[in-house]
Amino acid sequence: MGKAKKEQKTLFDFERSTERVGEEVKLESGDKYYDKREISPFDIPKNWIWTKLSDLTTEKTLNDGNWVLSKDMVSTGPVKLIQLGSIGDCQYIGKGFKYLTKKRFDELRGKQIYSGYLLVNRLIGDKMLSCIIPDLDGILMTAVDICWIAPNDRLYNIKYLMFLLASEYFQEKVRRLGRGSTRFRISKLNLINIAFPLPPLAEQARIVSLIESLFSRLDEARAKAREVIDGFELWKSAILHKAFTGRLVEQRPEEGTGEELFREIQAEKQRFVKEGKIKKEKPLPEIKEDEIPFEIPEGWKWVRWGELSESIQYGYNAPAKQTGRIKMVRISDIHENVVNWANVPYCDIDEEEIPTYLLRPNDILFARTGGTVGKSFLVLTMSEEAVYAGYLIRTRYSILLCPQYLKFFMDSQLYWTQLREGTIATAQPNCNGKTLAQMILPLPPLSEQKRIVSQIESLFSRMEEAVGKAKAVVEQIDAIKKSILEKAFRGELGTNDPTEESALALLKSVD
Image 1 (cartoon, one colour):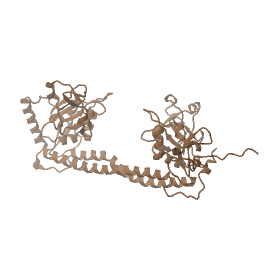
Image 2 (cartoon, rainbow, N blue to C red; image 1 turned 120 degrees about the vertical axis):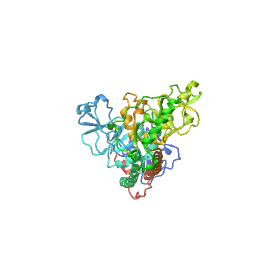
Image 3 (cartoon, one colour; image 1 turned 90 degrees about the vertical axis):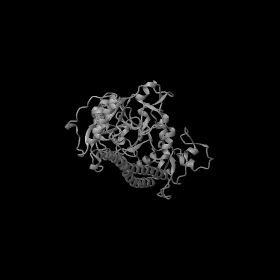
Image 4 (cartoon, one colour; image 1 turned 45 degrees about the vertical axis):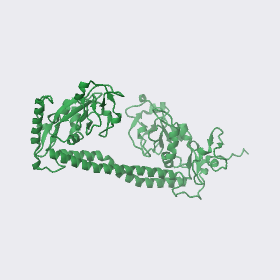
């Protein structure tokens, strides 16, 4: 007779041992040691075991994808390469494929994977993501930074592993073991040697079923909250469209007309020119019928921005400094219509040039180049003297206009459509003062402008409050999901049957 097979030890044996905490214990393989505190960081039911992916899998059932270069790919082919972007948080996103020929797949000794396999993105952003491949046709493969795990119904429920990998317990281990400054990732070796609890197969199935049931209800609530959050910009755009088409507030004949206001503004500008306060500008072209995008109330008037402005002035070009005579606002200093004055740098500027570039309350700044082209900022108050940088344009206008009305125009689709049409498409998109001056906008009487602004602010305030509550709901749901997973893998969901055979028996079937 042959020699009797030595009983296989597992992490479960060490977890239940009476050895003192912190003592190193040796696995049967003879080449790995584990600190008992690392093996069993929390208690689990007696018929569960602590194990690792390396105990449950072989190279045939767990491996990385192939190293595939751009030159290996073709526009279409029978082999589909699943990419990192298709792996979501416990869901397959499906962001398309790259393709290979069957010949190139064979030359690369491609590892074919199948629907039902678990994909694990070893490149870590906010968290390590994993998902199960849905029903897909064709020959499937994946890239080298993706680890795949084949189903094995004798050992583990593949969905159990997916939810396990999403748990905070496992994610914390991944963050601790990951490496890399620009591309943070966990190695396959580290991934497969993270210890985790494994219940009997029937319990795995019950855990998965309960998680899916609870998550389904939570996802419904989350989707409704996301609708509120994601719909805010669309709703905001609809409100602004109503505002600038004259359908947000009623028109009141006693408040006068846009035409009367326009004549007052022009008379004021002519007076300022005579007094030398502003420069005389070239007349702007008349507004043509085909420029008008929609109808406005009878008492309103279509005008060009340049007809309302007293000046459109480019900013001052100077390097930012830690100290200096005066602060210089840059577009990067503006966030959510607020300037953090503590972070605004200084610049050196001749004293006689300061008045030209000095900011005043109710000035509007406009980004003329780069990724933020078109972004605007209404200066409401000034905590200290400041000029503005060269990539900005300052527009100053009549006191007969409501500043917030003009700023809301610069948030509207009417403004952004005209801006895109006037933007010069280069590596650094840019837009000049001439484009801004020629933009058209509706001009209601001043009193109506103020009522429009008041209504917009009221509606936006209510919507922002609703969005805030929706975000809190999303955060709460995410926290509940984390809690469910934490309880699931500690055996605290109330699904465990202590009379079932220990999961230790599962390891005996490992090939």
